[in-house]
Image (tube, rainbow, N blue to C red; front, top):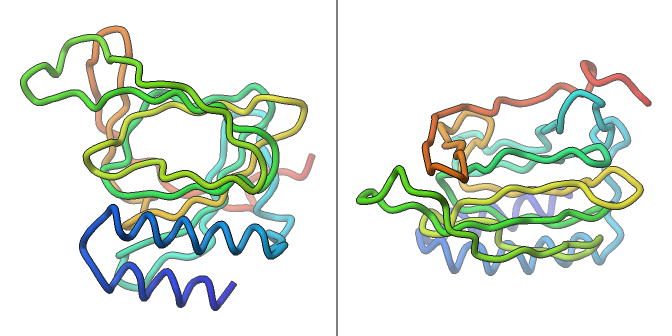
Length: 187
């Protein structure tokens, strides 16, 4: 894992081009998953109440972070943005992603426009967001919890992000925060 952290740090500090960063981080994350990396059990626990986000690494300057995000079967997120770049690799389970076109400033209160749906399986990696393409919802489908390794351009637990009502396009700001593995009981 330390080699992955060092490599992502070099990529994130080497350019400001989000599309280049996400392509290179996606390659690194694909290699990590293909290499058989195993997450510690305490950051793979689901919660019956909601999806949880465990910090795996936060750069000292908050320039990027990595998390284990865990959804129990049937849980889903609200439609949301990230306000930064991000790459997700599926570690376990199946994630159903529903993407939307990012609303424009000129039409902030119009219904969101669907932009496609994809199911992501273990070992698959996707660029979940860049600041110009950044609105989606995800759900855990299948018979086991979904676990993703997420890498973001910034400290995702402290970034102000938007949550959208897809029917109206209305947005509200939120900060997701981080979950602590000691607070999520083993199931």
